[in-house]
Image (tube, rainbow, N blue to C red):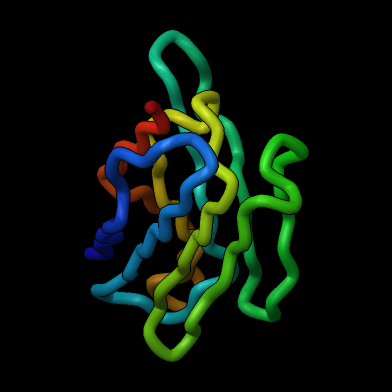
Length: 120
């Protein structure tokens, strides 16, 4: 089994910062990519940022320049530093990992989600 445990969400004022963390554990053979997605009520889950094991990153246009994704491969952990937060960043943020549990089995795994609320 694989578990993704997120932390770091909360309430912050507009213009503030938060840092999300997500640690993957369990029967992990290798991790290709990890990332963050977010979802608000009535909307589809959308990509926020992803990072591969090699360090290649991809960001949604709406967060480019404000959010930074990073990764500690030794700890199977991914981080999302969120600066200059806006009310429209309010959402449940989900961690995702694209990984192999064996050399031949590759799947997507999701965390339970952490609420980020940007409000004055």
